[in-house]
Length: 251
Image 1 (cartoon, rainbow, N blue to C red):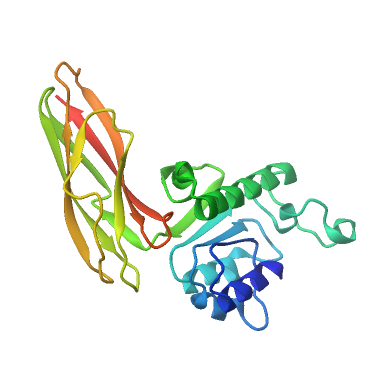
Image 2 (image 1 turned 90 degrees about the horizontal axis):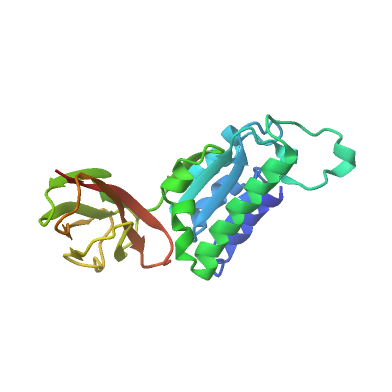
């Protein structure tokens, strides 16, 4: 029940800056009832084949009850005893999954390390592995996440010609229950661009602001598609991001 107890501890102590655990089990007093009081980013790392602490009746209920930012990465084929190096009682009573213990331990450590490196050390290069498309498309995982923000539309392509510009209009929405500001960032774009604003300023809960990103395509650029990412990073923690995918189609 150590995972569930970590939720109780974080709920009781606002100094906790980030919470990640493995196969968290319900406790008495209830971790599910306590998790709405956790105010830091949360990662509930689980195994899809866990028959001792099933994710459906533990991690999923914790995720549903938690405040965002929150993420529920479920390791495909992961099992309960796959989260420990050496199980107690020589493995008596352990379950099994469809992946090896070595694979599960490697994935577990990676998920926890990247989450803490981003949230505690500010490793911005890791955000896509925690909140972005790299995490979403990881074949070893099934992921649910809520970053407390939204970039809309999620995907957008704008046609243009070499030597001209492409203008993307998008909204940044604060889906949290408290006011916050957002830094707007562009990544993966090799050409000059301008943002109508690089920060939103404080947005009330549910409020949104419309922004523009204008991309200048150099003369002589051959026809094709240039993809890039627009993201909105929460100022309150400097780590959590919502993102959208963009593409400039050169005709």
